[in-house]
Length: 340
Ligand code: NDP
Ligand code: MG
Ligand code: MG
Image 1 (cartoon, helix red, strand yellow):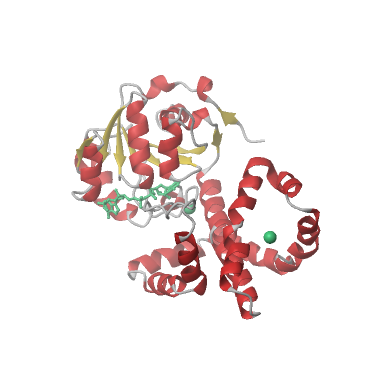
Image 2 (tube, rainbow, N blue to C red):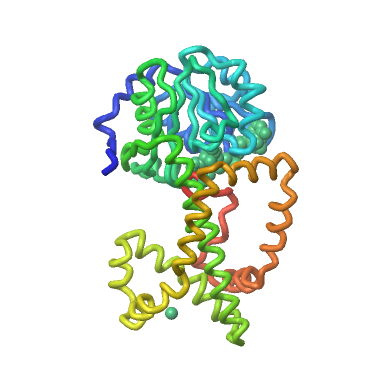
């Protein structure tokens, strides 16, 4: 069993008296910076001039260019989109990192796949909340926290573990539990989860179900409810009490159908495909394709994104959600799934 750390085991003193630069003020950045500040830590925000700069200032934080923020800080948390990190790191962070300071990430991608190679004289660790930024902020404000993973990649000061846990406590995660992992495990499981199950697996499952019903002549509105809308109710039950708890709440007919038909949809072949996805993640094949795609300005990403927006389930969903005031409009803030 993984060891889980809670607030009373954390020595937050190691982070007192140190200045933390939160680089980036997006989904995770705004939450980390504000939570750390409210926890009594010395925080500055490093961003480029523009929307984020104005927002961070409006939230009462001290804002600097990335270069300036790094120069005056002992702990540098990089919360830029993973694709933008290597360039900003090379130009503005690396030249200004003091020996003995700490370089921190919320996802291991760039370090694990060597897109960022930290110098040997700094601590390197990650603190990855297992939830989107708005939740990290909202749960903190309500007195709770989002669980997090932490991992130490390089420990030159001998205090990297303590610093990581103190940081996790500062953003509220130690209220919920902080689990130790490695950069390799965090990166590979995060990518696998979002590709095979949470994002890739789920959107494909929903579309295939919707297409099967509408191609057989059923009304798209009814297909939408059965294959997308009701998912939330099922997932909430699974989240609260596992598969058994969910099955306790559904009808026996639904449960019998679950037992008979689930394995016809997700077959041994599907599992083999998942193993292939995992191999491509482990070998660096997936990372390479994503890095190249970004270097070419995302031709495939942008095309597929446009095609996906035109899927019939989107039009019917938009209409139906407009008639359901209890369904809140989609959040404006970009939310990755637990480190997505
Ligand atoms: P966002 O996409 O929300 O980050 C946006 C921020 O980065 C903005 O402040 C933006 O500034 C700034 N930015 C973007 N490009 C540049 C650039 N080229 N130069 C300078 N600033 C730039 O990131 P996330 O919060 O989603 O992700 C941050 C990290 O956290 C990633 O490593 C991610 O994997 C990890 N993570 C994310 C989770 C999530 O729920 N989102 C969950 C757990 C981990 P501007 O306004 O000027 O564009
Ligand atoms: Mg039903
Ligand atoms: Mg991720």
